Amino acid sequence: MPAQEIAILTRRHKELAALLPHLQKASIPVHYERQDDALEVAPVVALELLARCITALAQNDHDLANSLLPQVLSHPAWGITPQQLWRLSSDAYDSRTRWMDRMETTPEFTHIHQWLIERAAASHQETLEVALDHLVGRPTEADTPEVFRSPLYEYYFSKEALDTNPDTYLEYLTALRTIRGHLREYAAKETLSLQSFVTFIELHRRLGAPLSMRRTVGEGDEKAIHLMTAHKSKGLEFEAVFIVNAIDTVWGEKARSPSRNINYPENLPLAPSGDTADERLRLFYVAMTRAKSYLNISYSSEDERGKQLLVASFLSEKPSQPIELPTSLENSVLNSELAWHTHLATPTKELEELLLPQLANYKLSATHLNNFLDVTRGGPRAFLLDNLLHFPSAKSSSASYGSAIHATLQQAHVHLVARKERKPLEDILHDFEQALQKERLSKDDYQLFLQKGSEQLRAFLDARYDDFNEQQKAELNFSHQDAHVGDAHLTGMIDVAEIDPKTKTMIVTDYKTGKPLKDGQARTDYEKIKLHKYTQQVMFYKLMVEHSRDYRGYKVTSGVLSFVEPTKTGEICQTRISYQADELDRFKKLLLAVWQRITSLDLPDTSEYDQSYKGILSFEQDLLDGTV
Image (cartoon, rainbow, N blue to C red):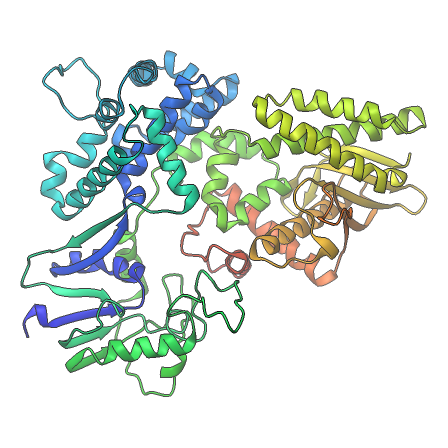
């Protein structure tokens, strides 16, 4: 049968993209057409990141540049080994200096440091087109061996890159052409700068507006099989059709869609096409009827992690014939060969040696635990980079605001305990103003949060100031309390601990400066994740307190989430979390599982987990079951 008479159909583009490396490995030519977002193509992403770093340096925003440099330099185009970056990060952290300062005196980074400084200075005068040429590293006649150029061109657009994978080369080139073409249309009457490029991309990302580009793999190859979505196949026919990944979470009743949390009125049919079970069934019928002579429907019984998969519900009554698969070992080897891996986040022998002194004295905090478990924000790999390697990151304005609020409330508690009287409101607001000034916010952010904090503190203290008492200890530090749960060494700071020495009980209060959860109820997926983290945080505090040196005989009876920000109706909310024995037992086992993974640097890849509350729960259960 001619190859062009064969089609592989799926519901979504990402499933087709996942097939491409396997087909390429088997030397099977394919024809595949889709619309891509130029802003998400690899060289454009790298170019944007480099531009952000250089414009930050040009504007003397050294904290922002410092937070971007790890991402810039970890790109393989620069040829910097993970070991070099780890040591640069470690040196900067130990000396409490920025990366640029360390790069200036570190031989393997001095040339990059000088080039970044030159590009930042030139960005004030250069036009955008010239600046982009420099950032891409396009060769010019004026180049000499002594002149350093950006490595992006050689990495993405060299002859070797073209010979190795011409389809990818053309995809990258199309993306670069697309974005430069759109930039020429953007503010056409103005002379654009590198800052214009950054602003242009920020605008598109904020509006969710992609820069569409048409990409065709295998165009013109008459001996290529066709890969397409069922939608794209409408009106076409092929001698043989293969419908792959016919599982329930893709085609059936458990299929997910971006709009699953949005409910429209019955008289307003705005749900995207293909989002209902009936529409998915009709679309599957379309895919089946594309076959003229031969139809094959297949699905896997389990995913890469061994999780069981179910056939689409409407196919569950049909007989199926299993296919003999490679052994688990062979499958693992194949998946390893075809998987994408991050440049920095795979632990190696060198990394283990570098982190050994730190791990010997490591203490687990509630924040570290939540970072490790939150697969929506990178999970274990983000934990490695942020909490073990101490890669710098800019502090957000909202985090600075939270720090100022916490410092202000702490001083109010300390004043009450020391003076036996409540601090006047005017003095508390003055403390907040001083604390906010120390956060070094921009002028606009400072004015915004000064007004916001003053209003919220007035409302909060009006409702809760009477609850402050002399038995409370603010910012109770457990860093030297030798708190051990099993092998896990715990640490943390409790915002307010209300201690009763007679009954040897404690109530733990944690101040929250984000949006309040009224009645302790979580409605959106984001709120569910937030409440889940908060609950685990107060369970962590209970274990930490009850296993500490000074409070080993105490019992934490409850945890209180005290929200500083009022609701839209002006209500100040508190959520009291009681401890259930079964939940606490599960959490203790989870904490020990995470501790073992951290101290052995066994950091699982969580990229395949759903980026949602359910994904977090799934990862936690796999940690408990030992299946990840």
